[in-house]
Image (cartoon, rainbow, N blue to C red):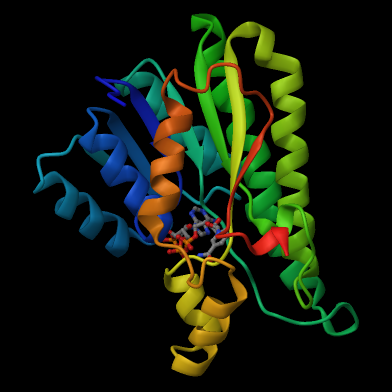
Length: 251
Ligand SMILES: NC(=O)c1ccc[n+]([C@@H]2O[C@H](COP(=O)([O-])OP(=O)(O)OC[C@H]3O[C@@H](n4cnc5c(N)ncnc54)[C@H](OP(=O)(O)O)[C@@H]3O)[C@@H](O)[C@H]2O)c1
């Protein structure tokens, strides 16, 4: 599973699943560029991982801003000149409300970050990978990319859309050596999970019981699948979404 000197982009890498992925990929020898909007969280994560002797670099970037995404790729091009793989992980889940109560502004924000952001990233990643004829792109989806959950219309739509981007990009560029796939977690113990449960042990127990495996996931469990997708092991896989949900969607 070694990634010797591969240059890898991880969006939303300062916390949660993205941080676990940045750490794991860098521990396997990758040079990781990770992003996030909050400078304080990004810089703290950068220092923590650099203190572990990992080759990581934080670049502030809001993935819903075209200008900031272009600046990010300008930095990757000028300072690394190649991009071998990318984990398009950054995303938001928004406020829970059923369709009749849903705010237009909440819809616009979730679509701008999760869907349009992923599209802009994939476009620029393909541009960097195509001349070399190889690369692996892993998009963040969710169980909500396959099923729907109540009160989550924008999130459900954004994750179904991410799977459409994943399949379209794979269809168009698999023959050029670029593998585009996605991961779809169930509930994972991160800030998003803590916000959903409000830290309430009863709610957390309910989430655990909702997964046939009997618990929610750990960030590392998603990171390990991302690492695998970035090695040559799954080299006949294209446009696939790896469900990592403790059996949630088989019920
Ligand atoms: N935890 C779960 O149960 C679960 C399940 C399925 C899918 N997911 C998805 O997994 C991804 C990671 O979530 P997480 O659970 O690890 O929660 P998290 O700790 O809140 O991670 C989200 C990351 O995305 C970054 N981010 C959010 N909006 C951004 C934007 N506009 N531009 C750039 N970065 C942005 C955040 O950093 P800043 O705030 O500093 O920008 C943060 O580092 C998300 O896309 C989420 O939807 C999570």
